Image 1 (cartoon, protein in one colour):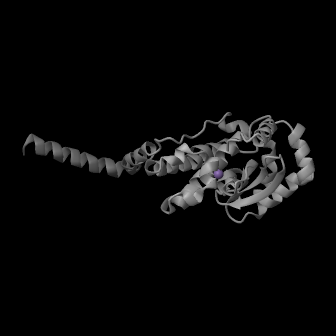
Image 2 (spheres, helix red, strand yellow; image 1 turned 90 degrees about the horizontal axis):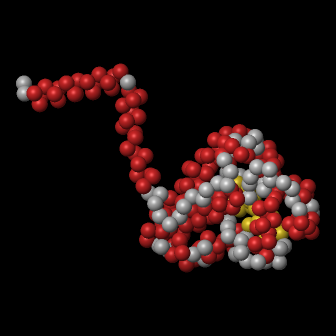
Image 3 (cartoon, rainbow, N blue to C red; image 1 turned 120 degrees about the vertical axis):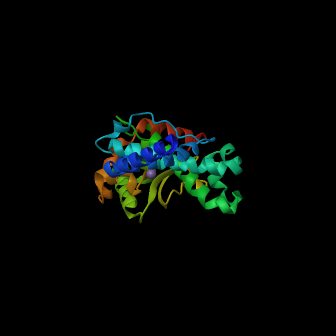
Length: 251
Ligand code: MN3
């Protein structure tokens, strides 16, 4: 037997022995290369926005693991999809989310539903991270006056909002919208639809997809809806309210 054949025989026998002794290790090695292409696919004009606070900052109302998975997996998936769409449709990255979602009829039909879901998901989650934070304070000033005037005050607004969130069948969002005159309204939408689809703007919104709460609350969506108000950053809501009235609200 040549040294080459002896070596092959030895390697093969060693491989079989290793596979028998440590099947998990072999499995893990076999799985490892599959992760690389997903990371490479993330390159492009769309980026996952950085959170202004750590994943555990909203505990005990939203647990750190939920925040981490929600941000780095669920939101990232929308970013990855948008970057893939942008390869053949670069104008998607040149327009604002409001322009894209408000003009879906001009998006090529083959990718229209995908863009609706992914741009809606990107806009929804960018807003969602922005309006939450530790030590969120209390509603005040113009935005509190608008809640009193248009939504019957804080207690009624939160009760109605939680009820609307509870009524969403399956996955979706509940929003408070704001128009250029500062008038507020409440609505819920399925999937990742954002009010921008109808030319409206969200002042705030809560994600009632199960991934937003299931690790801590399981099937108890009403408990999550109630607890979520403890995470709302009212200083940021006031900033968004002022920006909406001057046409400068981003997402
Ligand atoms: Mn979500």
